Amino acid sequence: MEISSATFALFAPIVVLAVISTAVRLIHVSLFEKHFKLTFEHAPVRSLFYFTAWAFLVVYLFPAQVHELFMHVTLIDYLFLAFVMLVIFPGLYHVTRKQSGNPEWLAAFYPGQGMLTLGERYILAKIGDVVFQQLIAGAMILTLAAGGVSYPEIVITFVALFAAAHAYLFRSSGTFWGIYYTTYAALGGFAFTFFIIFVPNGIVYSILLHMLFYVLSGVLFAKLPRPSRAVYHDLSGVEPI
Image 1 (cartoon, rainbow, N blue to C red):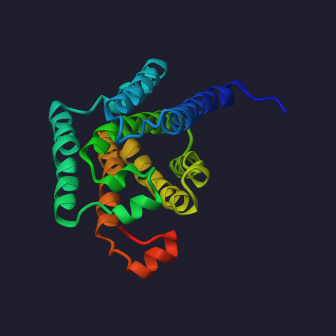
Image 2 (cartoon, rainbow, N blue to C red):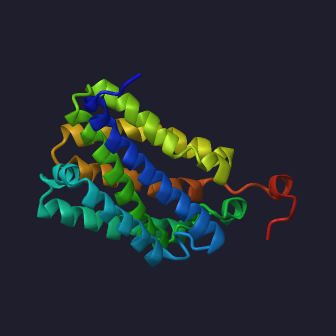
């Protein structure tokens, strides 16, 4: 079956973006985290630079889509985004950590989940990752929209792609985190698509909503009641410290 030039022109950029996203994630997980032990919380600046560099590649390869994403974003929007990301979100982590402490009992089971540290360093590193993901998502959504794909079809396609992009977590982080992230990724796909297509400066709201997920998740797990000594022993096989 031959592929028409129109179909190729529509889906080739989607494939390229998917390959970039997959490569970036595989390199970070297999090389940074597993080999060099450079996690978000342990190497925030290097993690930030890593994802920022890949974000610039997306800007270089898809300038039209990136321009459309940010063409309505004003200086006030940028200042608001920076204030929330660099002041409000780290402040929420700081206050929660001081009031409730970070969930060390849960972090002991899942040391790879940086949000459980409730550390400001994690947020700094995660900003680059979130912006990179949103550039990938925005470019995909706008490419499909420019190709004449209907809004419901874009939503279905993007939800499936965004959920599939997090499926590797089932293997790298376990079933619980695989289900947790994949479920919210699918739900986020609805919101991101709406913001990008219907809201002039929707990329700002998409970035904030995406980052808010990690912030509120950290706060939520910090507020969970600690298990009793007996439950902890049954889960881990050792007595709590």
